[in-house]
Image 1: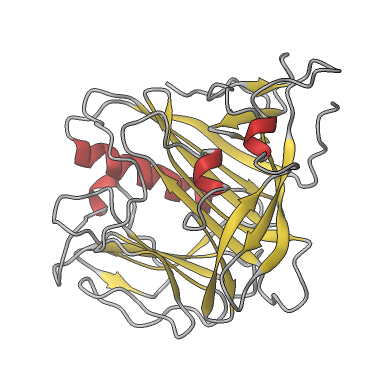
Image 2 (image 1 turned 135 degrees about the horizontal axis):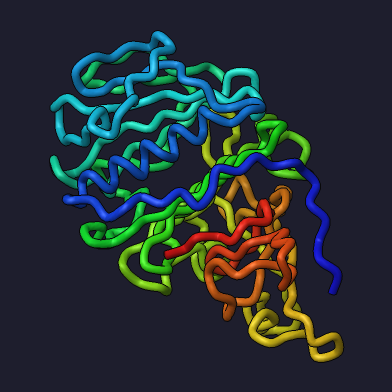
Length: 330
């Protein structure tokens, strides 16, 4: 089959290598700082800082206090911690995202609060209390805990992060790789062809992974579970499945992806839709821009087409637009 067309223009900050740190804590700090720097560093419609805390000083004053990796401090209970609020006007006039380094134990950097405010915005804050918003929706609760990144050993291992953002601000995605595995995927993006009534059609997807090659952004996590992706409807959430083509009883899209097309000999790429089965929100609600299912047998870092153009790259069981460079995975 012909390769799909990319509908948006993307900016890339990819193949960023974090050398093995002395401690696991330092590597988590360096990875998250690198992701934040990429988000605010894009030339067109970057995320902007609304406020921050480095655990010593805090304020909703547009000051970026995450200037060094040591400014990122995780903590539990009422202890001081770091947080940052970022704004993306490409998604909505005042769409904000909070990253707060809350954990269920003082040294658990795998956990983090991730909270969005689609319209009103965050306010109030201190080094011990994160800002809040009247319309906030919690994606991750670090005290529960819910991991933002896999529980892999970072000491002695190199970690790589990739960040990409569309020039219209509608799509932001990051991937973190370690030892050849995708140990974290996060995206926050507008749904394409959203149904009438979905006034702020934004979807977040988060896939951390423990130290296993089976728990990356996989078909079984995104098509078979509705816990990875969330849409926003006013102040309520919409649990979403990533849908795939399927036909015949008992046959789903994954089964279609384990063999090449028997006429053309080509491996398939198929679009990804969004659907909900929760009462009151049921239905097919739209699709995702510029992201496709690939074969579940493909390796992380593989590219399409199989030449030097490298228009697309593979992370887990999905394919995203790429900038032509060789993706660094290990």
